[in-house]
Amino acid sequence: MAIERTFSIIKPDAVSATKIGAVISKLETGGLRVIASRMVHLTGDQARRFYAVHKDRPFYGALVKFMTEGPIVVQVLEGENAIARNREVMGATNPAEAADGTIRKELGTNIERNAVHGSDGPDTARQEIAFFFPECDLPPAE
Image (cartoon, rainbow, N blue to C red; front, side, top):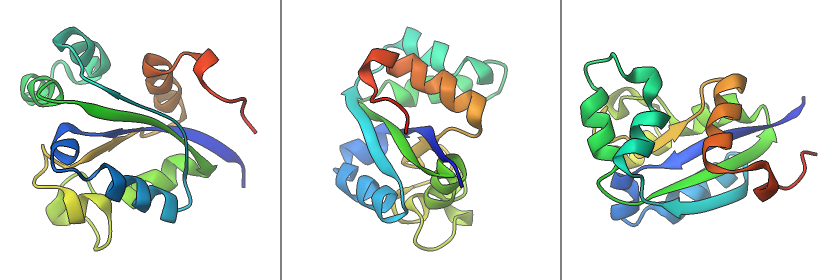
């Protein structure tokens, strides 16, 4: 299986609840390696650009507001089948539907405040990584 990279956000709810370490521990235990990480506080403009794919959805305004309410931790993860693996470790978007032991089941509050974000495919991962991490910030791919 090929080593791939994916993008992850620890959202404001998990950061404010001091769960950064718990999230990273779950990711690492799940076979993912953090190869780049930084804490940022998104501006409204940054959040609107990052979530532009959702601009016509009814939850877009609330999402932008939530993602700008406090700092977030953005990360690049690497591992075998990293995109699918990260999504498995995160759990279903709605914590009430997430499997036991997943990040969202243990740390999420509801479908909006669900602790983490992860890329849903290779193209999205590349775009999301590039949004926060210029190539010069990343180690070369294995």
